[in-house]
Image 1 (spheres, rainbow, N blue to C red):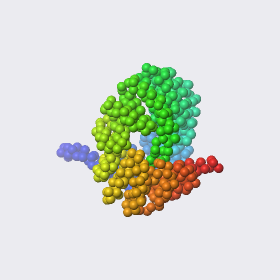
Image 2 (image 1 turned 60 degrees about the vertical axis):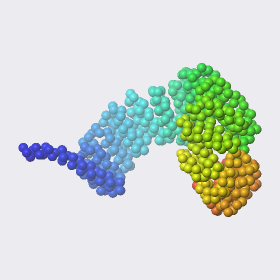
Image 3 (image 1 turned 120 degrees about the vertical axis):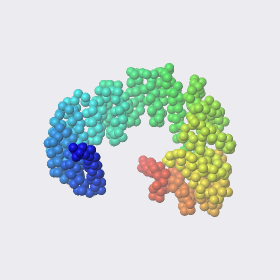
Image 4 (image 1 turned 135 degrees about the vertical axis):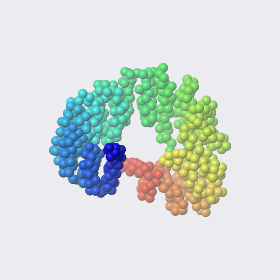
Length: 613
């Protein structure tokens, strides 16, 4: 009795010990497998599979090892015996079919996969399970055959369509994939967004969007959801006007105060498709004058007009130059847009009015170079919108104006207002911190400038971070000679204030002092940029040539090369020389930040010369 009691007490402990021992062996086998010692792993897996034949994990690991060792006959024998023990386990048929397929015996692979389905061919899931094994082996035609059979028998055909669509996308039969998705959409119109997401995974492939459009056009009158899908596909193919026509048709049926039109207008605006976005906003304004989207549509319409005009404006500005003197000759074209924004200010006191005020201020500042009028509108934003995102944006523009007017202390106060604002965006706060760092630099407070730069939290890939890194580098290499660094800072301030005559003189003086080393090269770079701003191209070319050949602490070697090529291309329009410099640049600076731009410019120039011939 005592022995029996003792055995009963110890039995659970024995089970725990046994299971622990099995787990340890399994982990050892995995270690062998990961180390490439497949035979050692196989021996342990075989032992475990015999000890616990019901453990699927052990059995699957053993079969995987057989396949890795190319012991196909062992895999076949093992799986065949397993099927005898568990004839209703469909996964075993899938695995056995896979072994035959990997072995190169597609006939037997097909036979065993079909047997797996026939174990219960009323069960629709069997078709999907077995087709997945076929897909894993890239036997796509077989997988399609099984799924088509299953779809024909199934009462719920949608999952089969999704599976088929995915396989067709693998085989690059995008039209067929689209037809399967459309079949599913016709049965479940509320799944439009889900289907769009699935299609988006392959629409970037060559021909995918065009094939999908052709499929959707065949069924567009079957269901409005198909029209919405087609509209989505048109946008993906940059057929914005076609998409807009469909959106208007859908809107006539669905209505909803023009929400479909508004969403389309907003998305095309974000894609910089200002022509069609403008039409969409105008359509909504005219058709739904009492819509809750009317105010947003009005300012959206005004912004599309402004940004569309900006594209024309930029074509007339020499934006390739590092420092650009704004040509205000065409600024009068912005007057109607300003008046449109003014009409919005009268209509509403919301954040839309603040945005309208800010846009007017920006136009006066950047297009008219009218600092006084710009200040008026930015100050109105500050007065009205302390809890708006435009509070930070307006203060930043005011700080730039104060800097231009040489009121550095006022600029610092305005920048501090941004940093302390809870509503200002992170991007605006970082820009404010950078301007604070520049002001400290202009004032000769170099260590304080560096501390401010450290606090800028930005992605290293953008212009702000690159500028911050450049300023930090200039201070670190030049602060040993603080007097000349201060002279350089004064030149930088004059350049910021567009006082190019004074800036040019200071940069020239510093660039001619060969004892300054780093400051000498930096000043020569800036000197060249100021010369280019004033169209003094011959002198700029000589300066850039000298700079590109300099070996001493030349952190601007790639930039000077790239800018020299740009002067030849856009300044004096000497394409042959520009091509030569671009080619040399690509050879010398394969890791430069300007690499992609140089490659594109070189390609465009070669194409232009080929066309002229």
